[in-house]
Length: 361
Image (cartoon, rainbow, N blue to C red; front, side, top):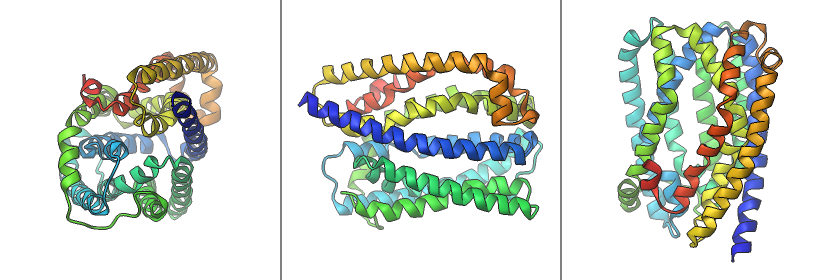
């Protein structure tokens, strides 16, 4: 049994890594183009609103993904009821974001966000709508399909953003990117979810699974909330007290540091819970955690050393000369990579053991 779980886990990890690496390469190349098309000031404006998008995603994450993966049997009525709940929740959070940020932005920054706030509000709702379809694909370990969807949404959106920029939409074309990606991704995920065991969801009124999710995964949401502020409070403070240009430099530095993590830790995470949920022996799960952590630590130390010693060349190649302010910051951030890699892998192991309480603590 241990060998079977082992094989399934590492097969799933290979699929997840392959798909995620493909996505991140495409996103990385697109980011290189954006860094040369848009100015640091424009990126700073987008970065200042993006932190609040993440906050609303934290509030809207009540553990739907992990719950669907952990449930052995979900009826079609329960699935449809859960989908209806995400639709209602998405619309509520969309309206709340628009109202709160429209008022907060007057204090938070001098920039008038206008239509950007409206576009982002709609994208928040759409991101919530895709919770059930993407969980259905994750449950069946269809990581390659998810990657194809993500890449397709990114590329189509990229082309449209450049067309809008060509027609002088300026920063609005960059803001429109949030909406484009979320809409394309939602419809593609909904289409491909038909081929999963859970099937394509529809609107329904059976909310029995919703009650179970809210009761059991409240601590997971607590973890997400604390984790959000530990990772994003700096962005809020920099935007308020230093301005959007400095925020853009800081955000690009942090983003560059995160890419090695995306190619390792974040790419592994989706594969771990669906496989290890079926493993009842907690000692074996602990052993897998140690094995994966050791490998991550080894590779992340090498990556950290490489980035620290080649920061100037990396910044000029990836972003261009207008982003040279990133160089000293990425040297500091590179030191964080091994610590981030090892600590970030623990989440799905706690979820696989049905221990959101321990994850929160």
